Image (cartoon, rainbow, N blue to C red; front, side, top):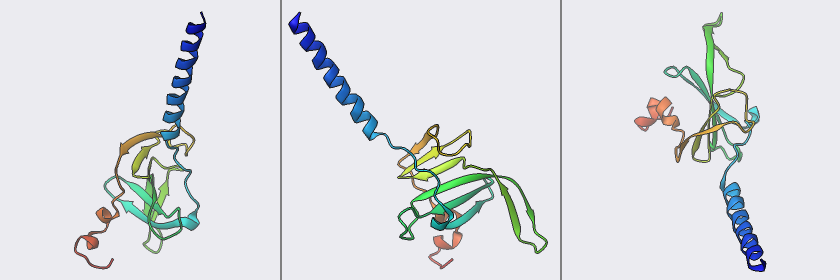
Length: 135
């Protein structure tokens, strides 16, 4: 009986080690930053989304991106575009991963990992970067 108890305790010990290692490895998506850390806004006509590019570290490098769906857009009386957006993003890019929030209810733990090892490519929206010109 003593050997059985020690085997069970050993199994419980090893299982607890593996379950904690998995929990530590998993990343949680940070909430959307304040406007002070926003570097740029990009409108994507193809996907009808507005991308907000942020610098969480404050060093001017983009390290967090959100994508909100456009509900409606129109022109102001001065001819400038006005976009009416969803309250919360549909997509997030952070830490080399793309996240999806189909419920669009903000970062609350129900976001899904959409694509791993992917970067947000801002040059896709700026053709001048393809030619090496200043935008």
